[in-house]
Amino acid sequence: MKTLIAYVSKYGTTRECATRLQELLGPDAGLADLNEAPKTDVSGYDLVVIGSPVYMGKIQKGARNFCKKNCARLLEKRVAFFVCGFSEKDQAMKCLAGQVPEELLNKAAAIGHFGGEVRPEKAKFIDKVFLEKVQQDETLHYEIDTAAIKAFCEALSGE
Image 1: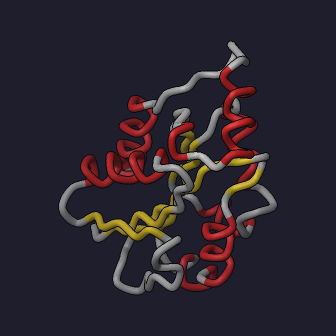
Image 2: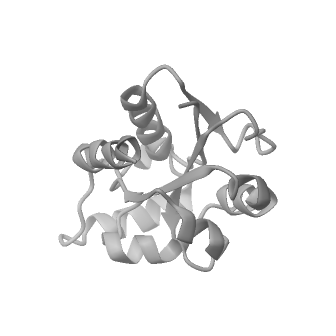
């Protein structure tokens, strides 16, 4: 099955998750960084996986725009979504609602939350301040959830 993993990454965590997912899905999986290629063509793919970090309760604009602009074409394909971030899984998943066309979410073969990492060395000043505050919250986990990536891949392969 020819698969496109289209993602937006602010500081590299979502890119790393997309790359790990690509490795698990095999040689028919390709990557598209929507920051570099916002007009990525989905026509040659059977499955399109869309990934984005969650910041301040929202997925990134590039992912939102990609979903809206390609909604009709994506409805003709298998679609799946993943998010990365520090919030709890349920809260992060709710971020997709209202930001991605509802018909796409209802059609999703899988929706995943892959956790997040603190990468202050790549952050802008205001984000560094935010990350410092986030790091003080001991209830949040600061690592990529490789088990979640594997389970997401298995869910896609199981259909």
